[in-house]
Length: 135
Image (cartoon, rainbow, N blue to C red; front, side, top):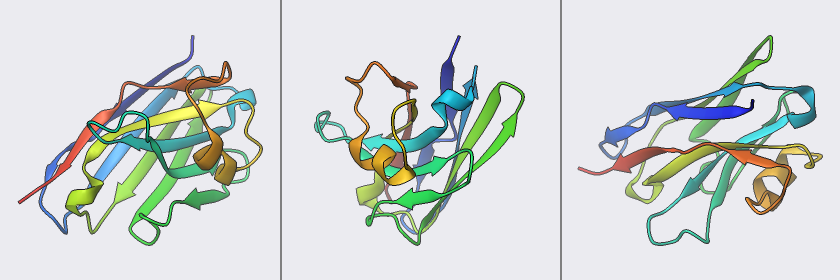
């Protein structure tokens, strides 16, 4: 059974750093596009694809809002993938629930971040972890 579980969120001051993790149990090569998305409270219809990665070739995509501040990476083991998001220079506008997601239909990391939708039957996502940036 495929399951994604995020961790690592918390409260951090502006300018601080956090590292998020997502354990993807049941990983298979048919779901090789994975990424981090965020949802702001009150804007549940405006999820943003923050950063995505092609597990196979390592190609990545970052949204303009996080480029240069966030780094995505992954570790692959048998039937298990761990996805990371290193976040630095955090700002209050980065406050959101961050969740990891995967798709079996997106051909590139960029499309994963910009076209992925929960409504697709090929989409799987986790419950999320809260990141709050505040002084």
